[in-house]
Image (cartoon, rainbow, N blue to C red):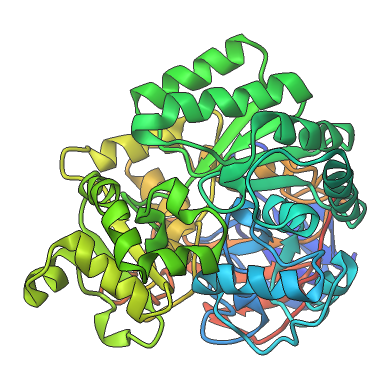
Length: 513
């Protein structure tokens, strides 16, 4: 039998959780044709995988990558970590479908996370937005309907429940995304304007998602000390709408584990993801109380630049800062000299309190600052992460944000940690780890022709050395690719070969299959 690509001599871990097998993989026309002993077969390209593991391409279910994959220094960060598909619109973030003025407002709000790349910013429909990516990305992007854009398009940034007309408009925008292949709806209920949404609004939209067989993926309204209330709201939405629930970046302490048990006992269909690092990352505006974030970017900036509003903000903001561990700046617009520095050290050097330095920083840099929030020392991060990754409902994600000179390491080494370091450390078997980053997310999000190595599936493949697969990034130098990734194929085309990117851009928009 002749193939376009033959991967020979490796140990295949097919994604199902089944034991590894020493077999070959034959690929033609972008699809897997055979997974078997294929001695004597010929191929246009033969990959010698002796001593290596051959697995389905990894799937990142929560990552802020879509604009970064269009070009620039981080275009290939995903494939260098073995990732062949990434879900779009995490936390409900996206820019369609929006009329021009609303598009500018959302662009301003999200610029801290995505920058301001020269991509036209002139679309109004979902189809035109998704067309941006044709022929320009190394790995696949999987659409999710973005609650933020859907809500802003229908009713702007105002508080209160939607009117009947606004609710109809939200459902219409949601259907536009679902018709474009969206695998569900993502929401950010600690960001604007999702923080203003009540449960009835979300249930109404999630009934539409459930009808399409999709998944509701919230950054929910509460983690850590508020995880019980956050989870209960997520599960209430699942019960009332019938939608499948997937909680974004949930760390598994005792409270979270108890909530998942409670949800399953009450019939909620739930899964979750988490990055394998004991540090979070988001914008500094998140340190303001929720009421001060209401109204979107411009309203928040007016508050932090007003002396009287600062006095109102100060007590609650100081408490929110104190609840965190060390806060290190990762990206500051027009302030690269501040990146990598801790908020506390900078405040001390300036002779001010942390809260006042934060206000001055936001006011002086247009509010566009990201920070890495290290977990407090009182938290046993490594134990919680191992418990999280071992949980049967867990799947992998990076939550990568590709901004600044000191981005969070999770955007570069996550899958090497899960499939490499956590396997060698005994958290998971290799078969379990591969399943959590391939077949499990593919099944959950309706990508039924990916995630498993078997005949007729699309040939998204990652070949790696299980002994060498490791995160090489550091907090001081995060933009370092992991070791151990040998080859990555996207629908049979090499995007990584011999550990180096090829420059190929075979990725495409991939919806529900």
